[in-house]
Amino acid sequence: MIQDAKKQLTLWMMKNPPWTNVYGLARSLIALGTLLTLLFNPASVFFKTQNQMLSFSDTFSLFLLFPDFRYIEVVKAVCICILILVVIGWRPRLTGFFHWWISYSFQNSAVTLDGGDQVAAVFTLLLLPLTLTDPRKWHWSPYEASFEKRPLEPYYRSLCWATLTIIRIQVAMLYFNSVIAKLMEEEWQNGTAVYYYLNDPMLGLPDALHSLFDFILQSKLVIIPTWGTLIVQTIMFCALFAPKKYWRLILFISIFMHEIFAVMLGLTSFSITVSGILVLFLVPAEKTVALNHYNSYFISYNFLNKRKRRKLYG
Image 1 (cartoon, rainbow, N blue to C red):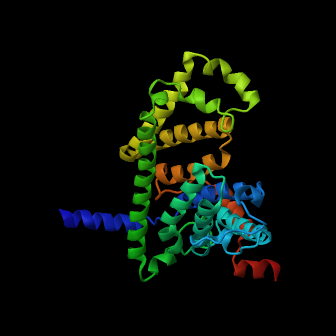
Image 2: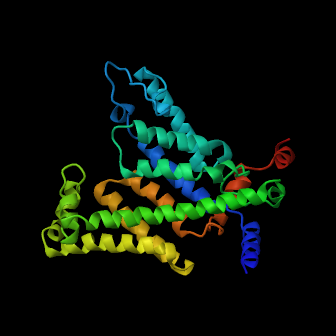
Image 3: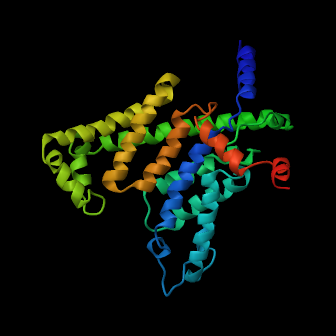
């Protein structure tokens, strides 16, 4: 019986490569969150100095390799270029490590952080087994049959599917821990926590939205978004055990909740990053995201192979 199960699992893994555009989309979203943070904020916001000198770090941070602050903008520009390559999906095997190093360095060196930066640092590390074994030029491309002839292909697939399972468990535990931590606080128990969050002078609603939602915050209706958040996050944890037919609905609800956070609390990069890990959690990794029309146009227009280029352009 065990041998039959092992055989079926092996056949399934060999039939379904883990390197699809599902994990590619997740990488792009995670990188996009960090990219927007670096692109629209000056380095002085994140890296504090004394007499224009940065303190040396023993955390192997990319941003603190050079002590003089004037070089930080150069490092930042290099990171932005690498993140753009990750977002467009070029050479996962080459960009995967650098994506993690940028995320890790930013999380360990920057002063102003939200939860998305820590999420990016953790999940880019967990994605390394997939990126380092991905032979494709673009992570949007289908997995070619010729790749299956690699000598270590069965071991690569076993490692990557195990990694994706660990990632799903990690995402589920992230929300489980979030729910448990909230339930320990009286404000979440009595349904008033959202009132305090949205009235916080730093994190709260902007003035335009505050006047629009003030009637909810000042009434017992505030219980709905407070307990609603707990209910949604509990459902997200339970999705670890849910049949795949419910994943799409849970994904929609989860992303909708995080986009509300983005609009109301200004957590844009956080919401984009979390959307990336939700793709890993709630989209079957063996499937292909329906980007076929865009992919066919994009590939035919931009990524013609050398033979076609010679034929067309000489």
